[in-house]
Image (cartoon, rainbow, N blue to C red; front, side, top):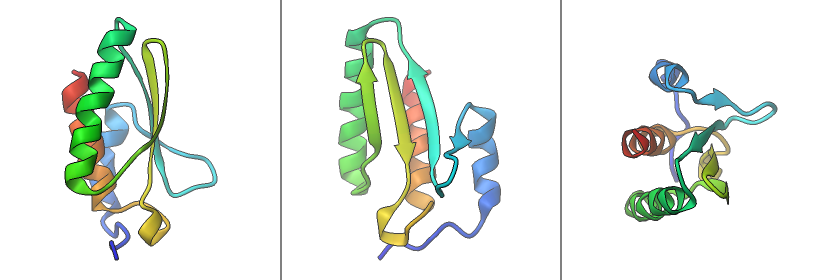
Length: 95
């Protein structure tokens, strides 16, 4: 079972890059915007491969050039290091 995130200071850089807490949940959210649907879909495909490597999968939805993401770890009923790692990877790939 994955352990819950204890060092919340690791979230500070994510908040600086547009991530925020989901109201009422121990989860992160961010809306990504791309130039085209194709770029959004390509990013989602790349992130799906990373998520599979981490064995950690986002809650997300796509509408045209936008992808809305929520990250939380269901095993620990809140945030974990996996969420931080995946969020950082998502930011890097989107820039």
